[in-house]
Image 1: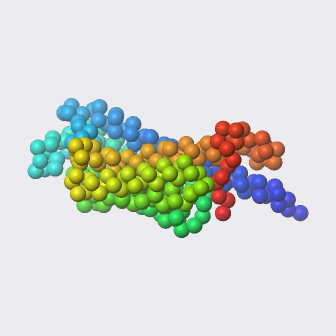
Image 2: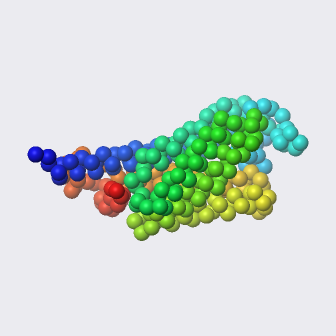
Image 3: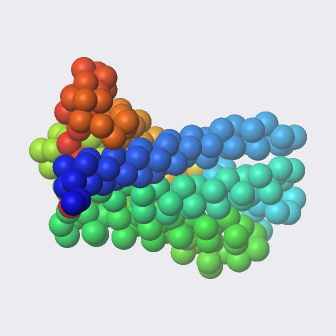
Length: 248
């Protein structure tokens, strides 16, 4: 005879563990910011957060870039930056697949995760096709990050609704901020932040959101051993409140 209660507990524990693992993967998006600091430190020419693109760190050649500009780009550790773009893409894709049940089911969850997946694929393109190697594919990948990634945050924020209001609001605000910055960036309105500053305002909300969402999910689904007694005494309840992730 099958013990249905035991089977249900085991299934719930397996889902929680999967979400927890995906959350840890998303937290690893911090590497994107660390990589920029490290690669930037290798420059022997000045690097400007307001005038240089993030992608300048992955530029494979030394010289003026764009070719008709007076901006000199030379990134000795460009391989590490391009690897960071690729790793960020994988972090988005793998994490999204694992944390799916952390969001209530419905069309907004489906749309949000799909948009995030496309943004992850875009980051792969950015890393595999540096700006000075294939600018067309590079721009398409960056556009997926800027537009689809920010839209994905908004959709997932709506999906969360009242389940996790703080994370929902943060998701929606971050996505809208990224979309506004993307619009200003494309229309060449930099608001005294420079082209590099506005690009970062468009690009940074997604990796920052991955880190924040990952921490929130780790807090909420810290998995106990799959036993009724352990589940009733799970210590994260006192710190994070009841686990509210969907089991559908």
